[in-house]
Length: 275
Image 1 (spheres, rainbow, N blue to C red):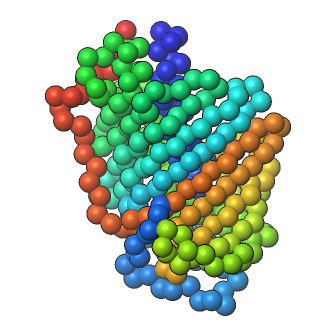
Image 2: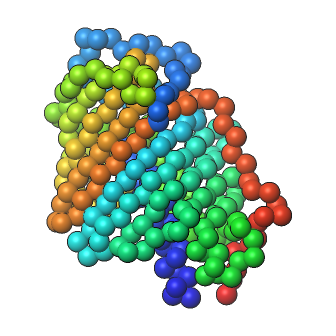
């Protein structure tokens, strides 16, 4: 049972690391109705406008790499991508190519799909520990306990609007220059934001979890690359406190484009073993 819990924790942590520190793409398409940013806007105004524009986004894809260092647990790295939609219902398809923490890793990576009322998880190591006979394990959100609840919470927090809202707390943001990000012309802004002030701008139900993941940090350094449509194409965040460090690089694309997030074929899905 202990080994099972450790493996489940590694899988859940891998998902969480990718989607939680984000601020959580590659070429992004322009969202419908996009209005070019006026060149004379102050940097802080651009971020405010970006936060408003992201509220119109209902689907996107993000590619990310997150490196973390913990004084007791060691180093870790997560690399993967996620397809996300909020309408007509919340759904997500997360693939982790690399996930390792403190000497533990997931050989072959991992994949998790949130679709309807279920989370479907495909992790080779997890299947071996549980003795599963099918490649995918289905965890009903309502019955799946802490593992399913954690994944759902992380996906719900991976909201582009909330992520962009964090950086609007910066009091020192400035324009760095203009750059091309995966073929898209963008304006580069950089600065820092105080964690407490940034978290306070999120919806009340999101604040406790966000603060937990950034608990040891006082300030976060960020860089954000914003397209002419007001939407972020790239975001980097880093922080260090009490020996702990994190560095996240995220690329956004496919804003408001149709996505297909489906449950795995039924004959490849088994239930979560109870013993």
